Length: 326
Image (cartoon, rainbow, N blue to C red; front, side):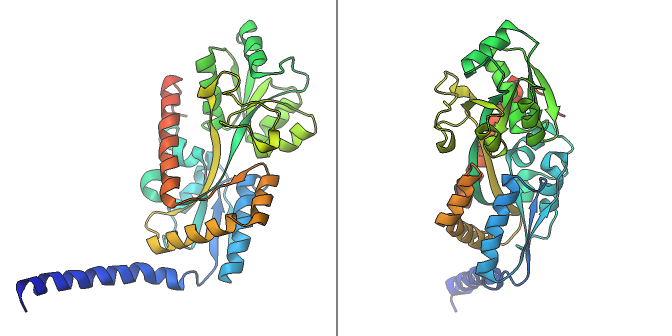
């Protein structure tokens, strides 16, 4: 056997063995129930969407999908449980900006590193934030609200659902770019913040659309603007921040699925492919739409790029607004 055969053939054999080892888990996986950890309380879109997906994955695989709520610490408790889980494909988790993008910058003692301890699976949905005010507010537009705030410096307040949330940073960005002086009032979640606006306890808030759709329809709050680049199909009469002269306030509320770093690539790709197929089903798209969210999907690389872009965006806001670690 010549030198080429002695060196190349063993190398090729090693490559084939590595490839076989990476594919094998996907061929037999899943052979037992799969757990999806939701880092929020039950009931919101971030909890319902993985349940919809899990139900259909269970039908495809013939295995139970167990959705487990681990709320607390602005989502860090649940995401940490994913990061520390065995990377065998049997633990997944729900990811949002707070615990996987913003958290590392604002919470120095975060017990995991989102970049090295987590693996993206698929982007499930996105939805805009809505700037809401009480129905008794004299403001009928974003411009009205900004003018009202400038006429009353330091007297208006804004409900913040969770310190370190995207709504918190979006509120700080609004204060920074529009030069208004308003006071942050923290609440434990989006729903309490929205109810505080509806009752007139606070003057305004940025809210995730699924959390306030019913309140808007019932006339209990007024929507002044959406943070998306285009108008939302469910709020066709509500103009975007860009239409009202403030394109720098564009922001999205996104949600995806993640796995522990080290989960076999073949399993991650299989998950991505099958969840994309599920979200393409008309009935699933309808269920998502009823909650005020748009089913997305896409490749794992696209999800990773979105998270990277979001990190850069919000790090700039944190620096510009001089937001200190919490």
